[in-house]
Image (tube, rainbow over all chains, first blue to last red; front, side, top):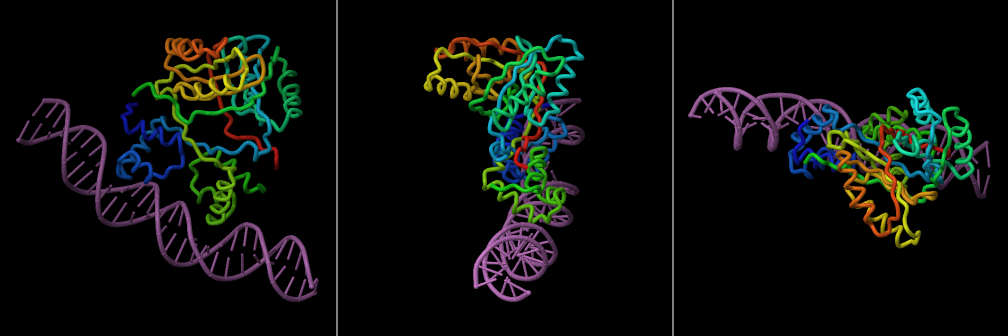
Length: 154
Length: 154
DNA sequence: CATTCCTCCGAATCTTTTTCGTGGAATGAT
DNA sequence: ATCATTCCACGAAAAAGATTCGGAGGAATG
């Protein structure tokens, strides 16, 4: 799909604030609301704009600790990879799963109550899995997300 | 801040779809729109609900490759950590930065055009930095985010 | 030039958001 | 037990916003 300057502006603004009203968005990109809406609808139906997700305060949810767990599997068969993938995504503590190439096979971002909870999670949900050979846990001191996906087209 | 069952429902629904209209949200949680709005405003002003971010298709932005770059610093002084942190967050390719405890000091999630771009990024923006001792790059085959932050309060 | 194709705009309509006053249930003191 | 007090939730009304639609302007094409 073809994206012009205004489409990119729209995408950037909505990445920063997904709840911008169409009217605000329109005036920010210099279009009439009706024209802006047409573009947003086009971006949505074209699969470029995929939806929005609210961000909540982890502390308010009782999350006191986050970690990255690097996981090595015993074998790299498709079945094992898929099994672990599904398992990890099913855990409530898991925020994100990365299947990677390198010394480890997965990096799993988890959010837990405290150190005790993390230990239990590591042992019960990772170490004991048959397809898991080895894990290495790194506590997260601080983390930040960039609001914007880079755009290499324009 | 005190969160009851309905607040949690609201937070979960907005995490899954941050653009739910207040009316839809209200009917989903079994409240009148006016009551639902009051709760959402309370969650917002209380800092529990922090905003929403649209999700865009990386491929549509010309992102063909993502990677996790594990970074080790030479020293662990506060100044070096802060300097690297700021630097990394300023790069357009960087989607997220994790300051971690463990064998590495940072994990940086980057989105690039292709392998060539990744090599340039690694060399120009990481390896050549004076505070960086060593990096290790892992290509991301696939990744997934869970929509929900776990809630350990309710 | 005439035609076609795009994209935008503004007005009208329809929906949603937001405000505000009322009433019921729970809490606590007398 | 009774009376305040507080906390929510509700519904109606007013305000704001979303969406539709017909048509104008402008660039490319033949």
